[in-house]
Image (spheres, helix red, strand yellow):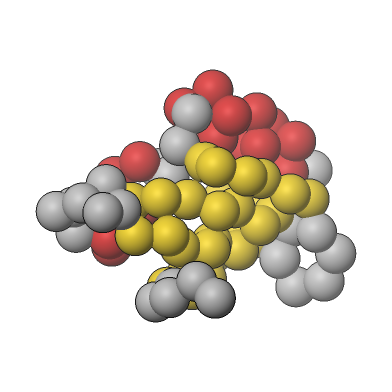
Length: 79
């Protein structure tokens, strides 16, 4: 069973759309939203079973140019 995580992404000024396009091209996300506030994007992602969550995010997402910071929220149970 995969693990659902939500990742908030802060982008360098002027790069939000480029970052979102690169995320879409990599087909990593379940859902991707532009947001207001401290972070620019909100991404829903399912981590494959058996994968290290931090390593998966590091290797597949955080190497995208323009990403300055991320905040990952793990989920435990859907109601």
